[in-house]
Image (cartoon, rainbow, N blue to C red; front, side):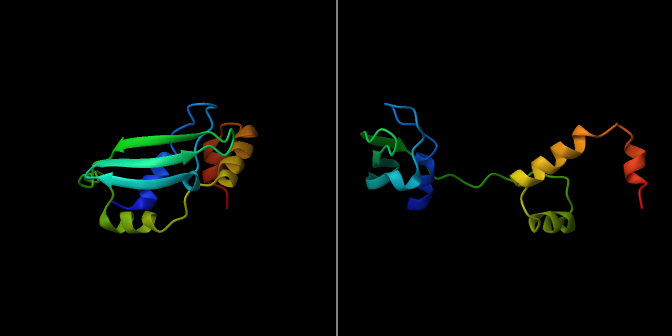
Length: 108
């Protein structure tokens, strides 16, 4: 199991004292026995320390179900992910959008 993956999983939980989420660098892997992992965590917000014990099982990769053709899948695999600026651009656009979709599609 990839230790970076384990630390990213820890970053999905919150400190039991103050509720702040842990960061990956706030944890240290102490060891594991099979699927049982032990980590020491430190909260950057309240400076409390804790112990995390987690059962993490490796499984098979889920099957991808899509109606994309292989060519479409390859095309979309290479595009950038949507970021915050993209979302803000769409928000700004929709704020002034009057609902006339044909006017937008037919613009040259």
